[in-house]
Length: 439
Image 1 (cartoon, one colour):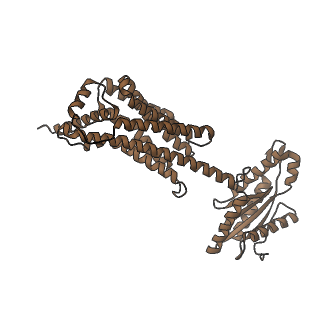
Image 2: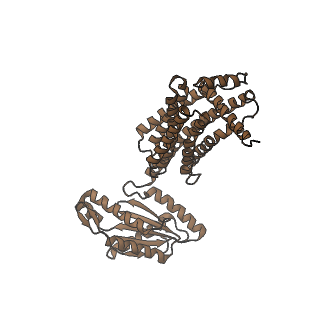
Image 3: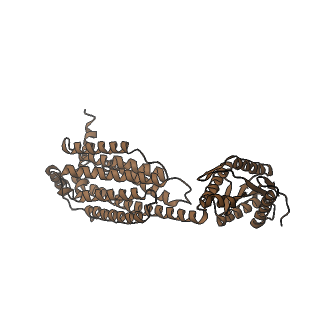
């Protein structure tokens, strides 16, 4: 008894289903054997279905429209990370749809090469776009190019040398499915409530990638093994479901891409509204808003909250000697040194000119004074290198702590008083009014 016979018959039937799928989705097979096979297995009238070539044409039109819109957005907003790559990805998807529509009017080998390459490149560009959007380095192109080339060559082999539609069908989804899954893995980062667009794109990309990988198995399991004619309607249904799923995925990915663009623009606008453009720390309005929240938290949890008011000594002299560019260099230099002294949860803002304020949540009085002294010593030790030579810089720091009933204005005023006290006592020093009564 030949135990392999049922398995051979099963896979031969799956192969026949793929042949019907190619006929249904792409307006007919290329060779006479496939054409006669389709006539003999799918000549029975079927239920009313959506015409698959129509769906492919619709998908192609949508891909072209999305490509046009994304190109227009990229043309005027070239700073959006990943947008150029996503535009090229949808362009490749448009080429893929067009190659399916015209496959009966071009040589079969050319059709196979364009189809296999365009869908793989579309998925790879989507993956690269997601990495660029997340600020990650681009993946090495050599590996991807090698894999895509191998798949295309294999597809040509199973077209010319050893014709096998089932293997070509599986190859078409192998590379693109993996890249869509990698795209999902790359984007699914961050708090969902803050970046929902990333998770929407990741969900659609991941589900589509998974579906593309298991699609050949779906044709094998979804059709009855008895009688080719009996399975014809099921194959038509499955083929149209595949095309419909791809079209919906295209629409959802386009929607997700536009949401990611909106997310980036919103984040940039918020950054411009909240961050000082010169020093890249919070501006006055944003810092005061964060300080109010910190005061509320300190009052509720009864944890310590310290504030440091920092003023750069003799800053006007720097401007007069080295000009505004030298002054800008000094400000950026100070912020770089201060950032190295602070914890992740500490917040620094520029209130104006050469005056900075820092609040330190959950900091004791001893810890606050230690941070202030460390910052003072570091600034005095590290000169600023400017076009007019090195500038030796010092700072005067006033320290205070939150007391029950303090408002943000009261807390800042007390830190300011301590800072002016440091200036009165000779500058380049730290003074504390942590336990002074609120004014």
